Image (tube, rainbow, N blue to C red; front, top):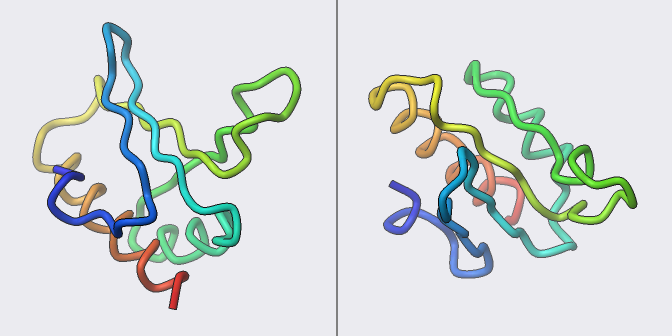
Length: 89
């Protein structure tokens, strides 16, 4: 879902046996601004630093996908890509 729509400056790391995928975003792009745009679309994200004891991964998003049906995942992926592009302008 992400591979077709992500801007070139965003890296997608698919799950390798776990329940999460990761997006790595250029450090100049504000995760908080991306989140603000997504909340309006009923999509929420959490900064990757929340999953690190040392607050690493502040330019990353950890994406859970096991609890959602494919239609919701597709919608969320589309909106995340659009929000990243919007904030990056």
